[in-house]
Amino acid sequence: MSSDSNHHFSQSHMYASLTAYLQDLQESGIDGIPLEAEVAAASAGTAAMRASAAPQGKEGDRYEHLSAPEVHETLEQIRKNLGACQRCKLGATRKNLVFGVGNPKARLVFVGEGPGADEDAQGEPFVGDAGKMLNRIIAAMELKREDVYICNVVKCRPPQNRPPEADEVTTCSPFLLRQLASIKPEVIVALGTSAAHALLQTKVPISKMRGKFHDFHGMPLMPTYHPSYLLRTGGNSDSFWSVWDDMTQVLRLLKLPVPDKIRKK
Ligand code: URA
Image 1 (tube, rainbow, N blue to C red):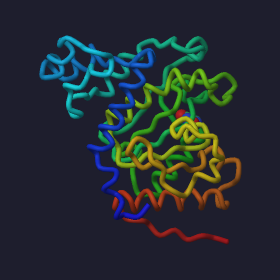
Image 2 (image 1 turned 90 degrees about the horizontal axis):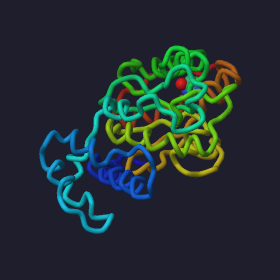
Image 3 (image 1 turned 180 degrees about the vertical axis):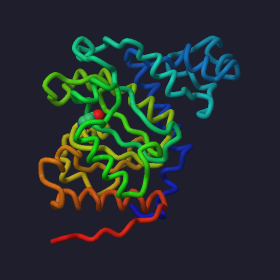
Image 4 (image 1 turned 90 degrees about the vertical axis):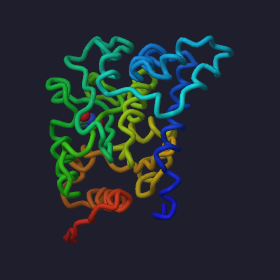
């Protein structure tokens, strides 16, 4: 994607598109999309309150009164709505629900697969070995963990660290979409196959998707290898440099400096 095309990813386009998507989800009966009560509350008694109280025509008309900026909810509200979630079978075996961490106004969001044992124990994403690798990537970008936002496709640990199953992804991903709609990042990085497949609704191998931006409801999304894969393939490997190439594209899109890195052959 050239920098000339950045305007395609303007915030208003992204926000309107995500809002429409969330409404579609709600209209298709997905549990946990609080488009009536919580959106009205989030808008603190303004037009949204009037809209939710207004007589409604056919289903799709419900939010036509709302201009996009009024449909806003905070990360706290989304976390509260998750509560002690038991919407899928992962709820029964988790220790802690791992919601996400970082800057609620981050320009860059990293999305992983799901919590592992360390994350389940601590309630924070990417705090184990994969987290240390992600921290290295963030530091190499000359960013801080607090600058970005980090979360996962599923918020509870799959047993034996297996990939999340389709029903778990379907149940949990509306909450991820709401987090992304709340943060409104300028770029999303999908870490690994599960995140890229869940967000882009595809089964294309990560090796074919990485290295270029994809459109996620108006937001540029860069798929890249998962930090755990980098740990398995070794520190200075081709996969590591592939991730670095992907991150340099992210930095350029964000108009941030791209640090020089020396590649040892
Ligand atoms: N792997 C992930 O995908 N997410 C985490 O939070 C930790 C490891």
